[in-house]
Length: 194
Image (cartoon, rainbow, N blue to C red; front, side):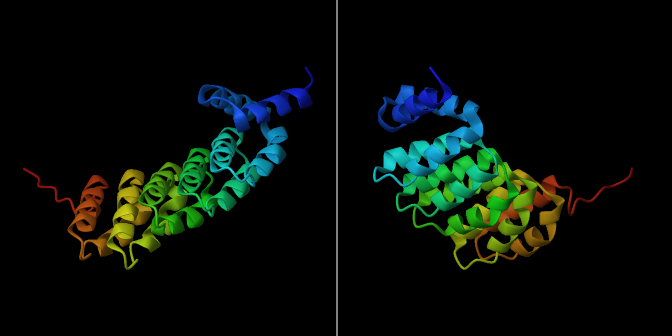
C-alpha cells in the first residue's frame, strides 16, 4: 500500500470508524506528520462535530506550526466539545503563540471549554504567564479563578507582581490561590535565625 493509500485509509477511519480504530488512526496520522495536515484541515470543515473533534485530536499528534494555526481556528468552532479538544491539543503541543487565544477561551460560555483552556495554558507554562496575568484583571470572578489556578500550576517568578495584586481580589478563592502560589515561590516568607 502506497503512502497516499495509507493516508486515505487513515483519514477514512478517522471520519467513520469505531472509537478505538479512530484513536489508532489518529496516532498513525501523527507519525505521518506534515503529510496529514491538508486532509485534517479538510476534516475541520466537516458538518459532523465528531469528525471535527477527531481532526483536532489528531492535530495534537501531528504538532508543528501549521497544526497550531488550524487548532487556533478550531478554538472558534460552534461546538464546545471541538473547542475543548482544540484547546487541549494546543496545550499538548505547547506552542506559546497559542496563549493569547487560549486565554480568551477562559471566558467561553462553556464551563468545560474554559476549564480545559486553563489546563492547556498550564501545560504551555512560562509563555502563558503574561496572558494569564492579564486575565486576573477580568470582571468575572470565574475567569480570574481559572487564571490564578493556572498560574499556580506554572509557578513562575514572572507572575509575582500579578499574584501580589490578586491578594486584594474580592474573591476568596482567587486570594487563596494567589497566596498559596506566592508562598510556594518563597515570596513573603520570613526566616528566623536562632
